[in-house]
Image (cartoon, rainbow, N blue to C red):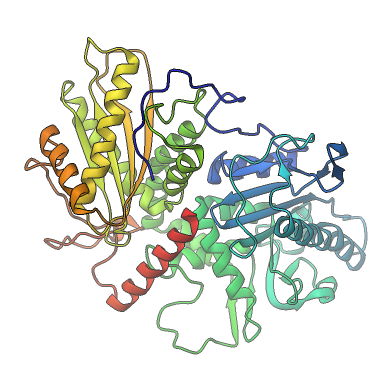
Length: 524
């Protein structure tokens, strides 16, 4: 995928101040701005976009652009379309009048807009633009309709105070009852079921529910997995699901299952699903009191260093994220950043810890090069390479970066010798933590290889030995971790995993296969 190329002396800058053309749109009102802030925090600025336009009513540059959905998130093959409506609830009216009116304007109309937006994306994925003039295309490529996985989310605001009055002991969130369908919603105040089983499923989240969900599943992978599981659970016509609010559903979801596969039903319930599942209001409050949950949230905060690093890489103010000696076009750079952003929160705990430990060790040896490789049993096809190199006093800034990116490339190629099952290597080159110069820079490399030929293997081995890369001084650390840290079991010698050692092997294999399949789909 990536090979070095001669230094380009004339590399024209892009017509925008960065590697990617990012929109600064935040939404046209406070409600949309809040939604966009939540989306950019979780999904990052390269994949979350507000105030988009379509060229639906334009022909040969003439006509007017049409506004698209409030927020669009495109991440590989996953496409999330958000509609945001703040409709005042008419509390001065009789509930039998106020609720149907609010439901129609806030929910029914949102669903109609979402289905229309999805239809347009399927038919014209190349006619969505960042600007009203329809001159700036999205910085990422929309997936083909036959490959795309669409997720529709209607964010509704304005009902919370009325809901709090109706259910004094609640949190003001809309209740869930999956047996309610279509027009029957008008007779079930403050309750959401399945809008229309004949159409694409629409997730309805009120203002408080949205914040709860995006606080607990705050990466693109975690969020999409929740939406997929939620849709399958609530749309099962053979089972009725009732909950006093979305927060109860979320609490059960993250409490059940294990570190990489959650569920709404407890383990051991049997092969047949129940006819009725009811969640009272004890789950969310109970979860927040659990000490292992409190510790998990602390680790979540520490792992946001990974999020911040990714956003910084995305928003670099000049086109130097990928050095000019590397023939890596933007779509390959986006692929590398996307793989990093695809890491769920739990794995970000581990990646952040590995990177911080490497930088701390490097700081103690200012004149030495240091690297760290990271992989897991669950995803043996993906390897990260973190590299810091000192800058020689005789080197210019450009010479230093040339040397570092060349070394990073050799580390990525050499890692294939150490991890033959891996086929994707993400290299991250950073300034040495003990640097004595003002410049700051990062390099990102994506190297893919299924198998070396004998000639390639010999060449890589030659360079590996020549530059002392991953040699006899390599130290290997094996370990495992759990999503809820205080429940971490005692260590077992020789075991390397991010999962509990007591898990069923068949389940491990099934989940690893599904995870790899998902990764492959989102690498396209």
